[in-house]
Image (cartoon, rainbow, N blue to C red; front, top):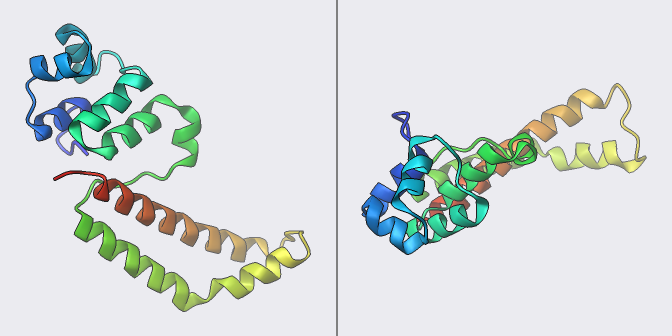
Length: 150
């Protein structure tokens, strides 16, 4: 989200229109602790990141926090772009349409039918999985954009 290298926690707080003092009070933490999170000195605990997400009405904060603080999440979740709902929806529909035009469902069924992926099937499966990963990314961007109040 912060394209200019700024901290996600500070960026979301500012976008929500809160001063550091007011946000700290509403979040139930000290101004000093919030300043440390916003400077990148330390990461906030998960429960505080959830409260920030709710207070700032920006699900991208929670998603970014999860990817930054969990190696498992970073390995499994796609890297997403923070974009407007309109951009996310158009991107999602365009990717779905391209995916459906290829009709990979038939090939995927053939590959899965015998419950074995042989060497000749692996390249096709990898291409289908890459397309599915792009769809997952697009769906996630829609969800995050829709979860933002502004």
